Image (cartoon, rainbow, N blue to C red; front, side, top):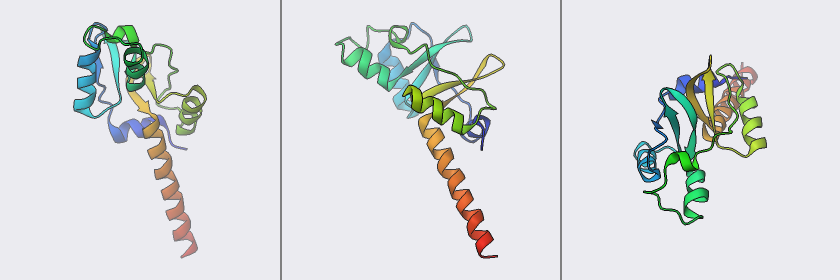
Length: 142
């Protein structure tokens, strides 16, 4: 089973982050520009939480708040489980499924080293299955 570090190496560990005082509208623009579904909230190189599209829809839109007046600190998710680069993709899938979450921070020696998404986990699982099928095909035809 592959590890989280494999995914981070493939996708890169470039983390889109904003400060807690950033207006939600500005964070959404960053997410749109980078075609991502979340931003990390950081202060003085310290991880505080993540703001996702789900946070926006449930904590701003459904509550009738204004995206320009609401800060990311007001709506960010702070209680996500985290994983290490050495954790398996299977472990990520279990955590994300059981907690019904789409993003998790990855910490290496207490330092944020990336974000892993459900999409990353699914893509890695599909890639592993394709490789297994290819190896079986080669074995059968050799």
